[in-house]
Length: 157
Image (cartoon, rainbow, N blue to C red):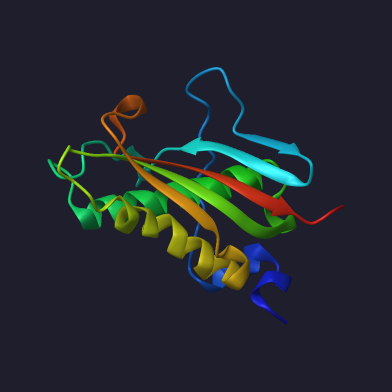
């Protein structure tokens, strides 16, 4: 049985991963929209131990902290899929979009985004390998250090 065929909640338990509670939207949108066999997951912010990770990479947030923040965004993506009843239907992670609150001289956005990307491969195996963008931005909602959104292919019911 491949990773993709195993129940994802069992896989998460084997990895020692506990999903956080799915965060409520901070504005006028829904966390997940299912359309055309895809789940579009709105941008998720990084919460570690219940606290939002804020700051700017290249100023007051280290590369290691940024990578951990991106992983936390990835965990929130999984939590949103679980809350929407879609986590066990994930067939493939298609694309992640990572937005990194960055100082003008910071150029390691791809390394920060690896926090979320590596989590998806860890959880879903080859089905977690995806296309991606990693973009530096001057500010994010609530001062977050990182925000990650996702497009996920779903198995039919």
